[in-house]
Length: 94
Image 1 (tube, one colour):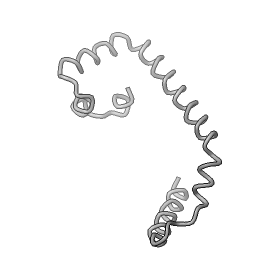
Image 2: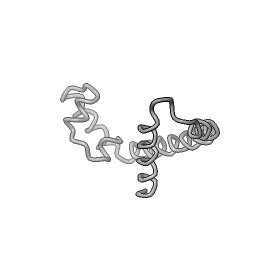
Image 3: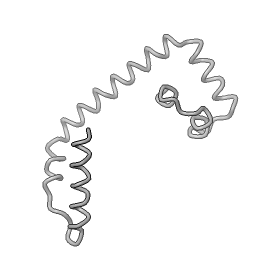
Image 4: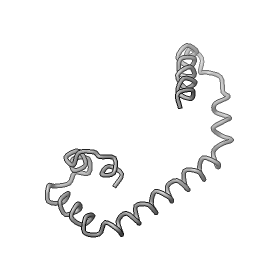
């Protein structure tokens, strides 16, 4: 559903999941025939995924901060600086 709602081409979705033409058509027919139920379940899946993401983000916050405060590996100082600058720019753009 993520790929369908994002507007990916059907050929891409079919190839990504290694489906035959018949299989993708059956799936699309099912979704269309059961649109209300499929959408409700999809929204539930999205909500549960977000709840899990938030849970694990909280569980790992201390470790992520600890890792972020580590010095760059020896010999990679320039690459480390470039990465930090890129992250800072991304944060500003967001």
